[in-house]
Length: 365
Image (cartoon, rainbow, N blue to C red; front, side, top):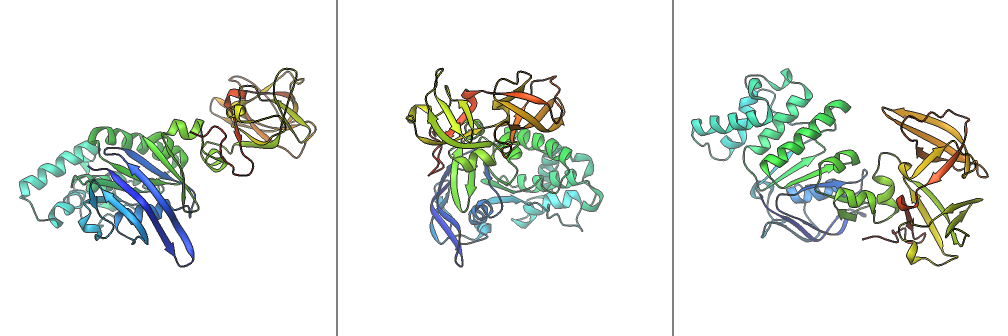
């Protein structure tokens, strides 16, 4: 396994800038997810690392070796794709053994030993005589992972490998992939548009948008201290609540005055960087807003509720601004219905403040 370094890497497709001056250093043994929406540059980054596309500028290193001018087969990488790419005419054993035979045909006994070891690690030891069409989606994905593992490459590249699986199986495979990484300690670069996959699997996440790297940090920092409004909104189960306004003084501390609403800000991240009268954008996730039966606290009307297992998500429209709708998370056991009049409690320590011009977090790390 090896580290991976991008230094000033750029890529264009005609007039479209797919990747703009990427600087990214992935440490040996890390699990790094490249996260972003379609067209953000994450897949382009993976393809440049794999040698499936040529860089227009900058350098790429695997370990100390410069690789951006090498063909894919000279980079000592292994890829796992969204569509598994198994050979349909080969058994599971033959699919797993193929990379070894393609790189010099070691003795049959060694091939068998390595195949059996990988198959046992992935829990497909009883499937070695089957063909891909006889496997479930999860089993096919395990075989695809095994085919990548068997060569002991310097870097594993996974391109949205769970996209074809149903929701419950994706959760199971996330668990399996994380356990596998803990076992093999390989360097993994994982492309996904699913922030839940990135958050649960990664040691660090690289968030992309419009060809530029927005933030590179551990999952908890990405979530709690997003670098800008895009990261704050993209990462999380639901869209973050934004509200633009100005900072004002209040009897009990600073307030955000916006669209007929006054919210307490004492304790909000980034407040120290602001003066009274400053324009700011407040960002607060659902768990930072709690509906209460005390309707004297920022009164609002429940517009919709969603029950998700033990969680009740409540959408409210504050009184005085019916065009504004916020997503809140109720306390366990709470029961609210559409049309209920409630109060909204803001937890300032969970609130984020952004510069309305640059969209950057005022307390970005």
